[in-house]
Amino acid sequence: MHHFICMMFSLLVITGLQVSVESAGTRSERSFSRHYKSELTVPNGGRWGSWGHREMCPTGTYAAGFSLKVEDHIGYRDDTALNGIRLHCVKKNSKGSSNSYHSYASVHSDVGSWGRWTDIKWCPSGFLTAFQLRVESPKGLGDDTAANNIRFTCSGGSLLQGDGTHWGDWSAWSQTCYGKGICGIKTRIEEPQGIGDDTALNDVRMYCCV
Image 1 (tube, rainbow, N blue to C red):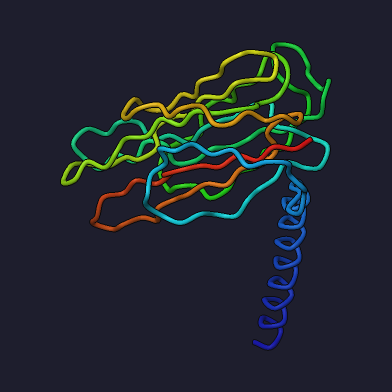
Image 2: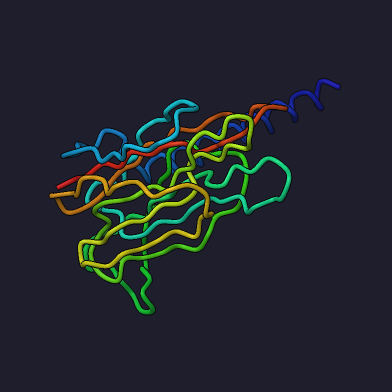
């Protein structure tokens, strides 16, 4: 029995070390204290939930692409629509072929519990510089979904629209980055409500770096 306990303790120590290394590796992909020039907001964000932590692209990189976590329409049950937004961060001139990148880092703030991640949408050139958010206004006794989709402009002039859902209205455009581009994100997420009405992602803020 003593030998068994020793073996189990050793296994727990090894597992703990592996988790620490993996966590450290994931953490090093982000730049938590990176300085930013401005914060981008839109006026129509949902009112439910709390703000997550600001998550920044690694120093020297900027968001050139994004993907969404979306729950598809599920009929007469509780829809949550947009659940998460990832930024995909690259260095300048790191593009490969087929409008993709050889190497990139992905960052996101808080994420809802439902849906699946869509394919990445990349700027044909440049970085993300401004956004619009599609948000459904409160429905009273109906099914609320809050944020549904997002659009970005690229510094090269292109417009990218996410593969989100269709409820609600588009906001006015956020301010535009006057640095190189968007480099960070913070999301407002409502936690699961049990038997109540779930909305998941309600609002988002983006950050610009020079």
